Image (cartoon, rainbow over all chains, first blue to last red; front, top):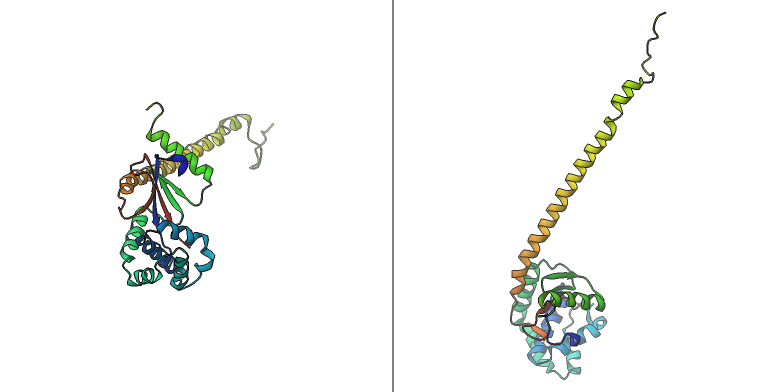
Length: 138
Length: 87
């Protein structure tokens, strides 16, 4: 992203494929309410093995939240209230509308990429799109 | 002297051979043409479906909800939409 400062915007859509992931998605948004969405998001990936097989991961995720100095009680009650459900379902519906059936799926402008790509490949595709959007000499 | 009658399994005369020989390549050619046409139609249909999907995709991709976490510059020429599962 830093390499393409001012030229690229990333929009993240959590696409929960199972109940454990749904809790994590809602927890991330609840962390976002406290201004730490990206920090929580990165932590979910970094510590993935510690929680992704738990049927009820909220306790563990709350422990992680503590490390980010989040208000864990507020985070838990936010998830338990279910007020992020609609948002999560809306994103899921949007993904389904775009025929997203597996993750990760990315769209670089209109170009669909399914599966994990190397950094080099992503850079190449971004450059390709930039060239299309801003032809040389303009 | 009576002419020899041809046994059923006897070789064909050179005239008969010359009249039948081109049939095989012609049949093959026909098969190739039909096969090629079927392939072209299949590729055409596949391409058309892909095109329609992509054409359809563009307007749907513009429908971004505004409640999303983003990085980078708003209004940038390249927008990456990432759909990921945390598990």
